[in-house]
Figure 1 (cartoon, rainbow, N blue to C red):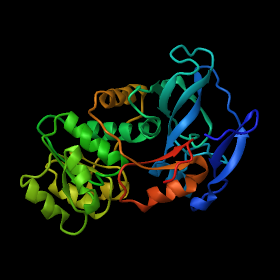
Figure 2 (tube, one colour):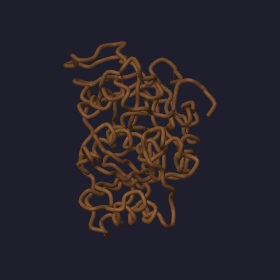
Figure 3 (cartoon, one colour):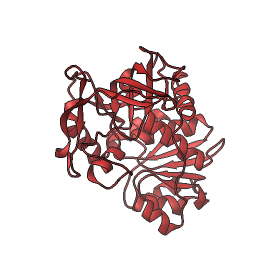
Figure 4 (cartoon, one colour):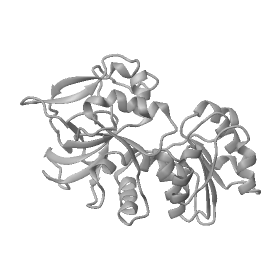
Amino acid sequence: MSAGTAGTMRAMAFASHGPAEVLRPVELPVPEPGPGEVRVRVRAAGVLPFDIGLRKGEIRPPGLVFPAVPGNEFAGTVDATGSEVTDFGPGDPVLGFSLLGSYAEYVVVTAENLVAKPDVMEWAVAGGFSGNAQGAHMALSAMRVGAGDTVLINAAAGGLGTLAVQLARAWGATTVIGTASEANHDHLRALGAIPVTYGEGLEERVRAIAPQGVDAALDGAGGEALRASAAVAKHPDRVITMVDTEEARRLGLPELTGTRTASRLAEMTALYEKGALRVHIRARYALERAADAQREVERGHGRGKVILTGEPLPN
């Protein structure tokens, strides 16, 4: 990302919760890696709904201090390592994850939060890969998706949805039904899903494709889409929502549990390297336009990932 003066770095941070405008450029000290930690010079960082919830104050992790730098997925090159780090060295291309800190020129994470970046994965893809890839892996694992399944995925054209569609196919699902706006239907067909449109009558449209119901359903839309998912699912314990925990509780559906791990991320990067996964980059923004990038994610109904990058490319 854009360089600061000696000993400092550029970052995007918010000093109070609020709308996208609270995200502002700041200059912070370059963080130092401690034992077991790695400092990464960030080449690209993904923009996730989690970051927006954090900025709005809807998500308040313990110990959050202002100014807070959002961003929990990134890719870049190793810049420095602390003691006890043996798997990575300066110059290594990596991608990884953290709770905070990726909207910056540098980020420090434990070495256990990093994996090697495949040569075939471009920087923009790598920067926005970890969060959605691991989210899809956790959800489909919890849903026990496997050979012969019919799977419904709501919000299938988004960053997480597109990876979930492809992962379900890679794990042997026979039929994947994806809900999306009509503008994204061809995109879903190209990924191997049968597209259906959001909105009233969703349950009937899904049943027209799967008269016996679906084996598992992943929801990224909430509300009526989640209720329709629960209605067409054969087993309520195989319905997971990523966005509407309150409605899931009312419907008696399980909550997603699990943690991000390097081994989980490495499994997904291996699938990408083999060509089993594709990632569509919807838009790239310079770091200083992080507020615009978050606004684009907030609008919803977009296809693929929104990325912050060191390259000042138009969106």
